Length: 290
Image (cartoon, rainbow, N blue to C red; front, side, top):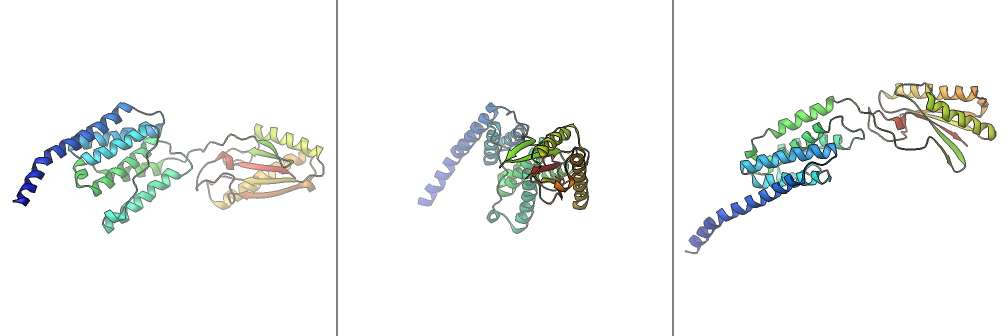
């Protein structure tokens, strides 16, 4: 008799539980919709992607998944840039864990690389598809989304891999500073070039004048490159830049015996980046009067 009563109670309570979950999902989705799109391109793309999934999940009856995606859409709307879900291997099979962890690492590398992807839409598409894929595996109800999230993830990652390397903007720094009574000048170079432009000419003119006023100081010339190309080519390019600057200094009246030259190349970056990244901050020759 007691078991029968418990069974009947569960049967009676189930519709109310379903209604409660549906109401929570509707409220979360409605709140996400009311927040509206953020200004930042990546946040805007994430907001749109997660909101689409939340709406689709609500229609498919996948309440928990819809609620999860609604929460992420809310974060994006507030400019909080939600991160991809963290994989919990304990909840997955061995084969699923291996593939998802590899996919997670691929996505993480794209997210943390210093250069910004040319199209935030592709990055957001990859992240949203990854979370959808993970949720489909975790919850049986999420499978009702009938969305090829796994396939969409790999498609987006392929598009990201095809994007050209984007110029990383230099930080706002002075090209001529005094540090510990030593004058330091930064001579910028264009990509793959060893020619001094008008900015470099102005810096070198001031360095030459200061070297004339401080005849006992050594002029240290250190030439750098960014990480586009192989190390040997960048080393040769750094040497060409160093020699170009040395020539300008000598032509300006600096005694060659006072000039020490070092071609650093990409071995010790001024601004750390991953490989194959164009960075103005690394395309410089640093001149120090010491």
